[in-house]
Image (cartoon, rainbow, N blue to C red):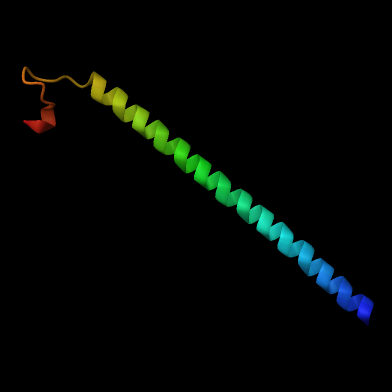
Length: 64
């Protein structure tokens, strides 16, 4: 019976370790992709602002 209890404990420990590793990997990937997406959006906004025409006072169309 002791062998079966030890087997169950080892199995649970391996499963727990796998969940922690996979969960950490998922959280890291989500954080990395969120940062990358935010950077791409910021770059696109800068590009759009450079290409948007301004009037003689340096104002954008939505600032009038």
